[in-house]
Length: 482
Image 1 (cartoon, rainbow, N blue to C red):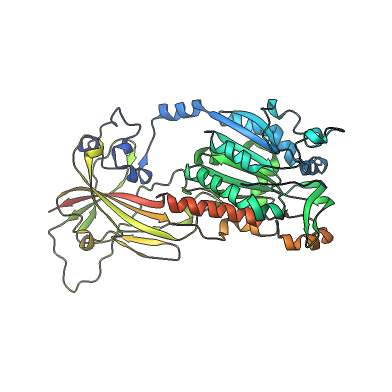
Image 2 (image 1 turned 180 degrees about the vertical axis):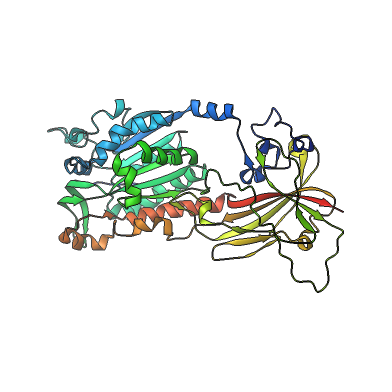
């Protein structure tokens, strides 16, 4: 019996810049004259020449295709309307070219093959079956995802992995978790995103390594539906663009599948925020006698909310509590679609005083870092209030202050709502394998898919705990006057 194993593995620029100067030649954008922690929350346009250069630079991409024998079922089950595996192999080069990427194909079993010209042969049965008399040298009995992830980890490129993610229970008990989670954690810590697509696919082939309690494993022939998977690993920008290109120019089943539920997706990222997330006016204006909107001049291409604070004006005794400028977050709109982001959070306030007009690292002096101004809000959210009475110690002198508020995820909720589909009807628990096999369901689920989701959530949680990466926040300028 064939045994298949998976081992898974913006802002106070120097005063001169506030007068409207261009960014210093040594920086790419005007926002880079501000402390690095503030830059994600400042709206800043990149020079068109830089954007054009980035697009022209393109990149490399490798498509890794699982060549195990069970993949034949996707080829034999294909029909005139649905050919997911063939469509992916034949259309991915064009999709990647639209991104400016040069693509290469490799197949993998226990090892990774040499590059295959445009995926030559991977849309035919011969790539996944053993020729007569060649069984001893035919590498189609294992799917070593640990080898693939190790290769992906060491390369600065976009990676696409196509597989059925099928692995036996005995592998899970031994090397599955220990081999994969450290690799995935390293990939996520490097700032890369892992997207998992599940594709409801027609299938006519064999389901291998079905656990039988006390009897080992068995193999059964099956005709129906069986999910096919695609892992996409790369920078956040490239993974998001890849998804957009698939929806706009890829096969119809991918373009419509996410909306219809026949294609499911989960994104795992240390930074789960939208590509453009800064807000011109993140804080409500409120109504406070010592605070008012201000219009400090800003350099071209930079937007940031500005307030003026009068220090000397006393608070009126017995007056009603003032309506303070506030920010509440994170909000669901702050995050990428389908991203795994929910989890315990902590908030932080950082304050800098503008020191000079030279647009250098010493142009902003750090004044404080604390939880000042924060309180609990709705479930999973924190609220920041710009309260002069509480911030007076930080605003101890006249000047222009930069206030940055951040919400950081300290771990990841497990199980996570964004990956619930991996624990749903597409997941097959080992103890249910025989009863499901006898029932012959319309969609045959994937053995231990929930375990793979748990491994991914665990890797993301470990990476989130190690890296000080805010997931939502704001930046604002406060001009303090007498």
